[in-house]
Length: 258
Length: 49
Image (cartoon, rainbow over all chains, first blue to last red; front, side, top):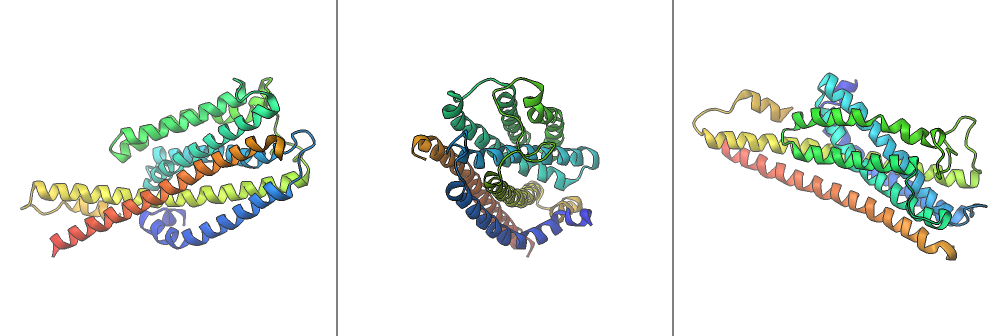
């Protein structure tokens, strides 16, 4: 079942009709989330109005970690099963994760100034999140450096799997070290410690961010499948121009139809 | 919101800018690849016939 859905041809067939409904649901959820975050949610008893920054900051942090795990699972798929859609998924996830990591860093910084009195401190949580963003930048750069997608996928997979060590460091940094950053208040043993008037807008915004990330990931994967078809057709054309009398290799034909 | 309005609107603005740029990049890239594929398939069909 999964293998059939993950075939490039069938992926393009099922993902195409899913794009518009998914985008509409994302836009509706985001509109509701923003209304709850900016209008309905009350000021926090300690943070005051700046709690509204958390409705963007926290989902961005979750999604930045989530897309790195998507890349890590896809990296395993690339290295172990050599699945072409694993490469495609991995490549499409990187810019989305990078954007969410950047949003997390910038919004956290803008929250830190009025609450901590500084935009930045080199504490474990902030630094490990910055490392995650730099990992994403490295992954994107590596994809662009190597021209052959299969070779690039192998190199990126290794880099991605090495970088997975940073994920538990980010998650548990607030427990392992004394940091300025507060501890977990939603994803923790014993359940969330924040009031429902703050928790509900936060979860709706997290759902909106997840839907947005999923929509963009599917769109990015579709683009990458098209890019690979374009590359193969260009190779075929170059081959035909070099040897006009010779017939086109059957292997190259099957690459295009794959 | 007046005391912290600058920080709040800057945070939402920065997020909108980053996510908006990401969406625009995805849409433009998708459109560019689709056009390139159509052009190449058109060329291939002309050479094939």
